[in-house]
Amino acid sequence: MVTAESTEPAPSPSGQGPIRVPTLGVWASGLASLLLYGSLFVLPVLGFFVAPMAVIPLLQRAGRTGSALQSWLWIVLVLAAASAVNGSRMGLLFVAGYLLMVALPVSSVELWERRGWSEGRWAALAVLAGLVVVLAAIAGAAWPVGPVEATVRWITEASKDAMKLYASAGVSQGQMQLALDASLPTMKWLAPQLPVAYMVAVLFWIRPRAPLFGLAVSPGPFEAYRSEEWLPAAFAMGGLGTLLLHGTARWIAVNVLGAVLILYFVHGLAIIRAHLARWVGRGWFVRWGVALLCLQFPMPVLVAGLGLWDSFFDLRPSRPSDHGRTT
Image 1 (tube, rainbow, N blue to C red):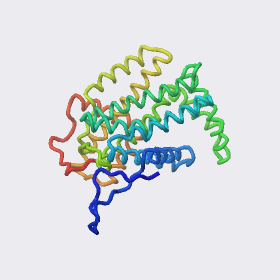
Image 2: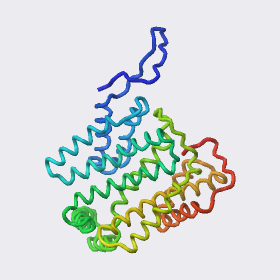
Image 3: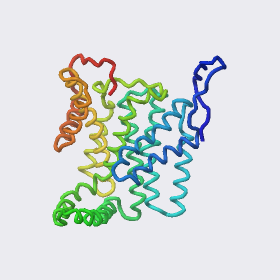
């Protein structure tokens, strides 16, 4: 359904009055976002790049009408009801994914606009809300067993199908089993960080583009990005919980710590970008080259350490020249 909604009608070239620019209505914008999000499950690789576009219809509506709540709320209610009726765990995870990837990023930008938050606070609160959704969804799908035990079972079951696929491609099943055995002790605790990291990528894709949809936010240059000032407290709490707690409580603490480190990783990239912008430039090859290099272990830990250190001691050049860039 397309409606003729617009906040600022454009003048008609023929002098017959203003032209109302059409935009998607409540139902159509929600449905469009759902279809784009669904590509994550039907397009094996391309879906990872198409699914984040699900925020576009909702951002457009939020920019024109002030809120996209009605556009995504009915989607969540319908999906949640269907999942509850069928008792489907996959349905629960599908709803949680829509909240994480689409509804929360859009709603967080709306709140950023209304509250006038700093960029660091916006990102931290959005990621914290996303982490709550992920942990609650995994715990709900795992019930009545613990989330760590359930994650081990899910990874083991998924690996059986993966081994068959790789075996058909000529990869040794022994090598696959060794890789699984090596990664399982870490993945059973940190599996929730995969969707959280995906959400962070969506948030920072939205960040410089939100004003293009009519949202009154003013993102600064990426090299000026700083984490929320209370993030070190969350880092300390997550670290202490990881060391002192056990079971599900430790699982929560580990993932709080992981989410904080992801935010500090982005902070560290901003520091590196600030120095490169001064001496090398801002070309796309600089942005993506540095980002890809920093994903190679142990670089993520070192880059996150830069972000944490910068919270206490300024590591950026004294006077960066940003030229108004936001990406």
